[in-house]
Length: 121
Image 1 (cartoon, rainbow, N blue to C red):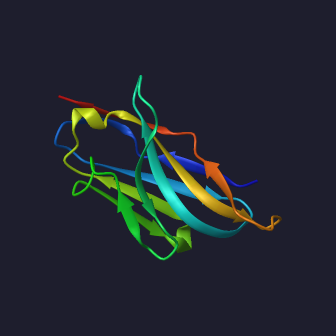
Image 2: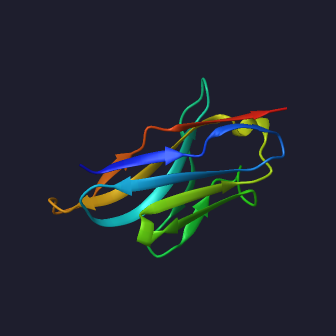
């Protein structure tokens, strides 16, 4: 069974930093694009950052220059380094991976369970 598990969330003061991790496990043939999303209370889920299998990255305007997405293909892990955190970054952060299981003929989207990030003023 293929799954994604996030970690690294927590409570931090404004201006601080956190690093989120998302590990893919299971019988995986390949991992394509991986993304971080977030959802704040009362708001729709929004894309934060994405990274292709080749390492190309994109960011939401709200996090450009503060967040960095990276991946370690050997560890099937994607990271989100979050610096200069703001109160408005408070949300549940989830990762999504476009992955092809060994038993499948095409890739599918998989989601992690999410990790809470709370930024206090």
